[in-house]
Image (cartoon, rainbow, N blue to C red; front, top):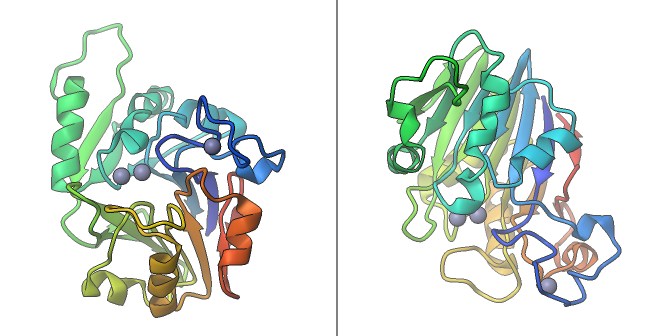
Length: 256
Ligand SMILES: [Zn+2]
Ligand SMILES: [Zn+2]
Ligand SMILES: [Zn+2]
C-alpha cells in the first residue's frame, strides 16, 4: 500500500492569503500546505480521500492518471469544493465512479452538486458519480474500507481505515475527539494520520496536546498529524511531537 499526502493544511491553506506571519512567509517547502487530501494506492486500486478546492492542482502536481473511487470524510468546504474536479477522471471511466460518504455528507453533496440526481444532458460532461452511504465496513476490489466515526462540530464526520495485504492505514483529517469504537478500530494500525490544527485549543479540532494523547492511545507503528494551520511551522511541529510522531507534509509518500 502506498499513501501520498496531497495536502496537509487546514481550511485556509498555508500560506493564508493576506497573512505575513513567519509560517506564511517561510521558505521551507513543507510550510506550503494545500487543503487536506490523501491518495492511497493498494493492489490495482487508486483511491482518494476527500476532494478539496485544490484538487485540480494536486492531481497535476502528482501526475495522477487514475482515481478509481473516492472516500469522503465530511461536507466542509475545504473537503468537498473540488468534488467537481473528479470529472476529469469519471469522463474516462466505463462506469460511474463510486464515492462513499456518511449519510449527512451524502445529503449535503446532493444539495451542493444537484446534478448528481439529474439525468445528464447528452453531449455534456458532468461528473459521473455513484454516491453511496457508508454504514459500516465493506470490501472494494480486494480492499477493506471501514468508516471511522469522529466528533467534529456539527459535521457528520467519518475518517477511513483502509486495509490491504495485511497492512492498515487510518486517516481522520478533522476531529475534536474519537469515540471508543473508533479508537478500537485504529489501535495498532501500521500508519495513522489525525487532525492537529494548532497549539491553542479549538472548539472543533484537536490541538497538538489532544492529538498526541489520541495517537499514544492508538499506538500505531507510525503516527502523523495533518490539517495544520499557519500558527505552526513544520520545523516547530517536529519539535512539539514526541518520538514516533511527526507532522505530514504535502508530497510525503509512505510505502506500507
Ligand atoms: Zn478540514
Ligand atoms: Zn500566516
Ligand atoms: Zn471540517
